[in-house]
Amino acid sequence: MQISPDQGAFMALLVQLMGAKKTLEIGVFTGYSSLAVALALPADGKITACDVSPHHGEIAQRYWQKAGVREKIDFHLAPALETLDRLLATGAEGTYDFVFIDADKRNYDGYYEKSLQLVRSGGIIAIDNVLWGGSVADPTIQDHDTVAIRELNTKLHGDDRITLSLLAIADGLTLALKR
Image (cartoon, rainbow, N blue to C red; front, top):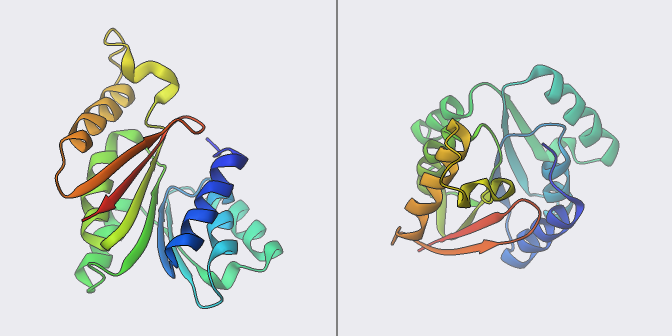
């Protein structure tokens, strides 16, 4: 469930290249991806981090503290769709530079749609696990997670609100640039 070191380095570089200051992470796990991004952000940069696991959240916060980036990360322990709705309700639409989605696959489409509202034009939504170990290319595999990712990949391919790039890094990383 952890992103790979090369993916973390790539995302950190991407955030720096964009000059991102405000980012969103959906699915924290033990905090490695948010740590990589936080270290790449400027001193006034912020991450809104969403996860449902108190155990993983505690682990993540411990690492953020050790790395000296805890103050950059606003951790929300709640279902991400609820947190995203709260952000939208409080006027955060179009204010995020970068979003990273790496949580429960069945909600990927909902996360994407809400992230598309939250990210600014020219901002990037990065979506992890879009190759799903190759399963998305095998039509005989029909479990819920694989189908959800496969359907999102198809949707993104035809979505004229974004410019799309799928990278074969780690388990597949989609970059969706909001037009």
